[in-house]
Length: 416
Ligand SMILES: Cc1ncc(COP(=O)(O)O)c(C=O)c1O
Ligand SMILES: N[C@@H](CCCC[NH3+])C(=O)O
Image: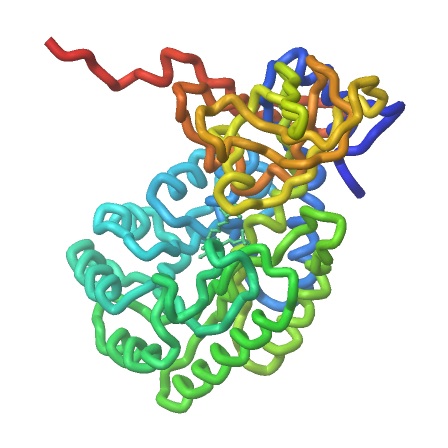
């Protein structure tokens, strides 16, 4: 069920008219649906069934603590890539014992904090990181639970900027070197081997790359077992894609996970997953107001109040995101509109050549904006970042206030 749909031609977020929310809270504005987040998370649990496992939401996709607290209440674990994300999880009521820590550049102080609160596992991404972790844990008199992030060298068939499992990518350790890594770890006094992980890329719409990666990891795990190194879990990362365009075939999460689980029967391995986008992308929209219309005879520009600083995906990855009217009865001009923002860059656009009826003052909603959207917002051009709302039925919570201008230069100083 779509949590953002039209009733009497007015776009609603669950039971609330988006136009009224925009009037009350201003634009640009992010709106999330609690129901949509919970439904997607539940699909992962359904796929897992009775198989032991942990669904760790990738905090980088949407780190608002309102969103994290909603998932923590559902029993989610969390995949983090910085101590900042760890503190957010704790602030949101998440359990540190359900946290996995990914990332190629973990600093010693970040390792210390993670060991102090007792996270589930460090997803180690290099031999040098393993040495540092063993030292840090040793200084604290602790043993760090670890998994090696294996780079299986498979083509995820996604946008090159969000592909992570190829030899040319900086992530993880080449699968051909994985055995030596585990042999070294097995000799260390302050790490404990518990798993193996991978993450081959994001916005994957085909199952084959996952299957190829799984096969590589399972054969490595079997080789290690033969040497007496027995793992407890396999972590297949995140990466399941969502429907942005009508032509996108969105994988069915529950059956995809159930297939994975079927491959694990009899291995004694529990399953960890790190989904981000597939849980939150379609649970969010960004609302923007049309400030001006401009026509040069060839191009029709609808200049809106949200720019690449608020939502950078179209500019950065040429990502196509659906743009719909908030009032479907708008009597505006029908044209192929370029929806462009206020930032002084030619790449500041939300969509190009969109067939819409638009009048000055109309509200537009960018769909699928729950993942990698607000989190990638910046203050470029000294623009305050938008407010974020969470809708639950007919209740709304401001889960992040709109920034004030004074927030933007707090911490800066003039010189004498
Ligand atoms: C290590 C790791 N895990 C999980 C994710 C989440 O990926 P996605 O949002 O595609 O599910 C990412 C981001 O691509 C990642 O780098
Ligand atoms: N930021 C990317 C996804 C990055 C995935 C992180 N490893 C996007 O918007 O599609």
